[in-house]
Amino acid sequence: MLNKNSIKKLTCLVAIAGVTTAIGFPVLAKPRSFYPRYALFQPSAYSSVPYRNSEKDIAQTLIQDGKFANLVDELKQAGLLDTLKQGNYTIFAPTDKAFNAVPKDVFKRYSQSENRMKVLKYHLVAGQITKENVDSGAVKTLEGQPVKIVVNDSTGTVKLNDANGKYPSTVAKNGVIIEVDKVLLPAGF
Image (tube, rainbow, N blue to C red; front, top):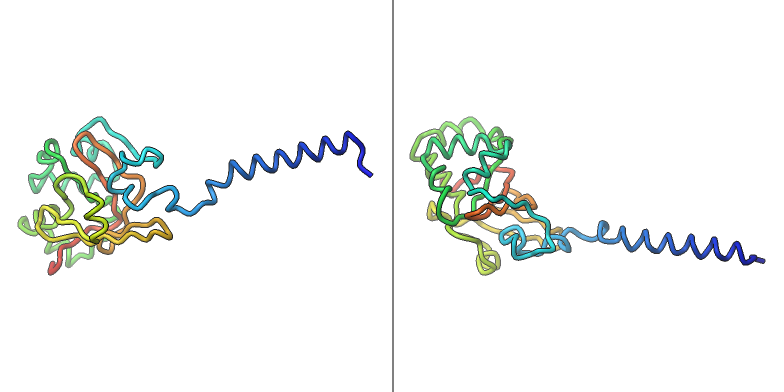
């Protein structure tokens, strides 16, 4: 038989377990509950979703973030870095690791100035990506060809062609930076 003191201890233990479970439950939830279908493309529209914010333009934000050094150098060589200081864009930003993973034969073709411009413009979208773009499964780039968008609602992942979009996006003064783990190549490259 339990005495009054044992009942108090048991009640306290059950209360602590309940609070711990309630606090820990969101951590156990599926990623999609943290990242709604459109959050990668329109991060500021989802205030409950964490995203990075920059008071600088896209060019300065990329320069400031050390993992995009190769992209910054390539944009400079193509004359596109200054373009990203004005206007409104979404950029699919391959990391240094993504550039380093490009096969030598592909990089050799890419290194030609007209191909460099074509590939880099394939990473740029004028303005913000809309729900309609995501729902249609593609978004037109400055290069002219579309990038395929596949959102897996059950896992919360987003594929851009064969690259993964990484949460959270960065909102710059003049657009959105979406980190990707591969260099995107237009069809026929």
